[in-house]
Image (cartoon, rainbow over all chains, first blue to last red; front, side, top):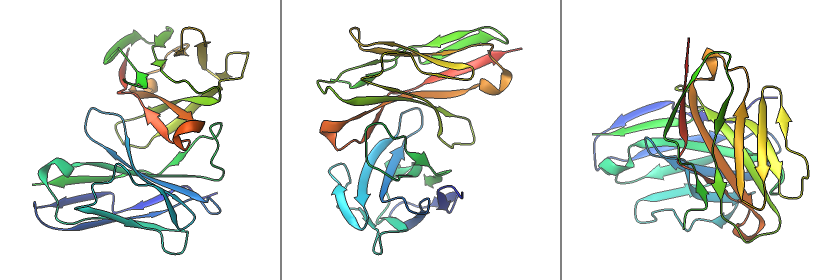
Length: 115
Length: 115
């Protein structure tokens, strides 16, 4: 079974530029998550999708961040315009059933550096 | 208040010895799950072990075991017979039914295994 795919793996941009990250979850997984992990910290949830609907985006900075999962499969996270403090690893995760007993399966992450 | 607390920013252990990584949690839910993840320098988040709040026995997975003390709200990870490849960041995380089953992470412990 293929794992969670993310691209690109690395991205370097200048502040005020825009950037987009892509995630393809494990086939059949209804729930998809985007996390931001700043260096030296644990991941922080940005947004959670159930199929193509948003379950929680309370920690997404909506003035600059947006995310979509139009067909309930793959997802795109966008930052526009980027700030220096957005430098982080962006992790995508999925799971088949949204229960507290189920682990989430993580992709390799996208490392973003904003100069 | 922090939901997950990992008080050891860094730990060192000699190869082939056992090591305990501490984790305490805070929740008022009756049903929750506790997870440990390993994050090597390459960045991927690798699931290690799970403990459910209703599980009476401590979870074990190979060289990993979880010392679950529900009354004290602690879920320490024990790694036996440490190997050089165990050097990584380790995160404790929790999913609660009341918070849409989102994963909340601690700040992590950097483990270094010495030859």
